Amino acid sequence: MTSAQWKRLVDHVVAVPEQIYETWTSSEGWNNRTKFGKEYGEDGVSWCVIFNWDMYHDLGLDAAVPKVDNVTVFSDWAKKRGQWSAYPSIGAWVNLGHGAHTELVVGFDSDTVFTKGGNSVRSGAADNGQGNGVWSHATARRSARVVGYFAPHFPDGLCPPTADPHDPRGGKAVTSWRHAPGTSTPTVSLAHVVQAARHDPPAPQGHTSHRGDVLLVEKALSAEGLLPRQYVDGSFGSRTVDAYSAWQRRCRLTGPAADGIPGRQTLSRLGAEHGFTVTA
Image (cartoon, rainbow, N blue to C red; front, side, top):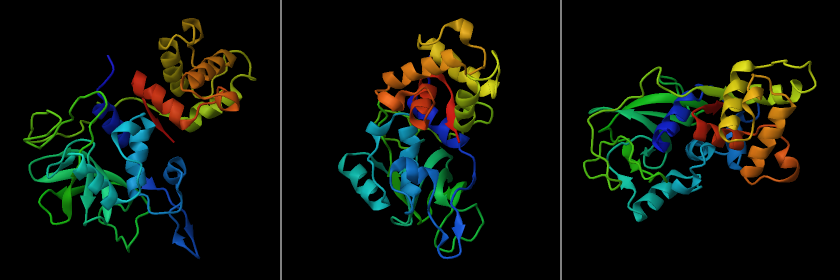
């Protein structure tokens, strides 16, 4: 059974490695250039909202959120559509500092909201006006810095854990919810499966570059009816390349874009349907 979309989302967000993603130059300092900006199509700019959007986009949940890069803009968008709340819920976009920053809610209790976001700094580090990576934080729910929350309607109609006693999505308010260690979905490295797709086919029969990652992808392709079970062996051989090409065409890619070499968007959509999340 496929997990609720909010659960797949929080698993995906939690799985993103916490580290610096920008690069430093002597002329610019931290330069806002990241893989998240490239995915969004607007790199070299403040990317906290962009990170939020990317997380939804990775799982094919674009319809639930606006493609904007400004905290105040998404807040106004949510208010006009009845998707604004004074209470945290899982997957919500929090407005911090009256439009200064945003992160995604990954947990909460009666006193604290737990978030993870991009264009931020490690907890306790000096910001100096600009974040440089993806990090987790804990903030007092009643802090003046917390303005409110954009609570997206998930396409599957399921309400995530929420603290809102009148959540319009129909969920019953709970006192707390935390992402339990060990319950997140498996992860697949995009870099690993791309390397396997390029190196396994010309190698000797049965060669495996990254067996664990490839097995998860092959099992998903087999479940989609695109790869016979006898070829689910952890080797990204020519049969798997052909099967992945068929998956890309199913995702409406054509021509050279459907070459059987995984890309982040199609791999994330495959994972969303078959229980894994995608890392770099």
